[in-house]
Length: 421
Ligand code: GLU
Image 1 (cartoon, rainbow, N blue to C red):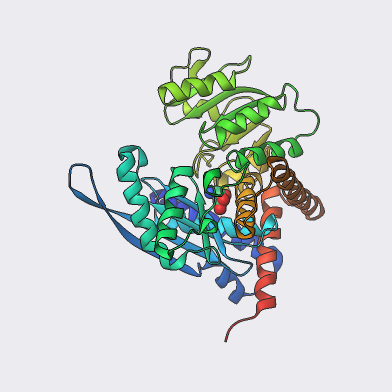
Image 2 (cartoon, helix red, strand yellow; image 1 turned 60 degrees about the vertical axis):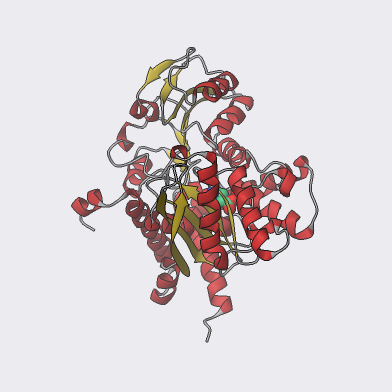
């Protein structure tokens, strides 16, 4: 694609181009043949649905929904459902592909999937949101199930959404099927420790990547939401000084350190970080460019680009979001000696505890928070050590190493299974 065409492409198309480029580079390093490359570049199943929704005033709107199963070679497809106005089939495909490598990298028996509905949940009443969710699930019903494809929360969806999904699927099945979805409320078979799991994984990855003590290390978090806010809290608990955070409403900085819990209470009360009294306001761009030890991008794709990468001053970037750094930005950051812990490693805590939830559902049992946390830590640390070792051995960035491991494991599984017929 020419640079001009790349600028015109939708954010979703750009995310997919990034994912395909990362796959291509890993495939080169693994010397994969053309047939296998094409298999891995192509989703196994890709469904677009129309979701009619009755609005409160009686009108009917139709929104688009998607579910992409990128790969099912190592196990059933797994991945979240995103409700966001700019979600499109390209973005969902990219996110599904990243889920495949993520699950392989952390050694859990899943392929990768993602779902999405092009809707702004904030523009809907709770009843409209419930209707959108249930109708979307009804449309994708034939391809999901505890042995087929297991959705979970992502941007714009939460425990309540997962409860509606569990209910819609179960009512259609005629009996309760808790294992069809993860990230459920604990009263419906959700796992202890699933809420906050992605953020605890971010903390584990950050502490592993930091050389020396976390005490007093400065942190900026872009996206003070479901992943970013608890990550800020966990990093502060570990001794770091969280100096800046941002969300859709604005960005705030306090160089002496923010009181993360007080800020969360402010956000709860007002709907965003904007106007927080014990900090100064700054622009979204300036937040990303703060002179800090650690930057955690925890919002959407494409936050760190060729345009702003050269102004990033953090020494370490830990990707709480999926795809926040473009491949061009990656090169600029590498040249500047900035370490990036890639998304498929840094934010894998969510799907790891989703897996633990699913195992508990299938066995009809429940584990203690401690047991869940120990397993999360073991899987995260094992994956981190494998990536660090591969990076050192082959002179690769952590992202390149993570992709070589993830893509390599999926390629091995394809070879062992062979091609039918
Ligand atoms: N949406 C999360 C992710 O991107 C979690 C997926 C899951 O738990 O299946 O990793």
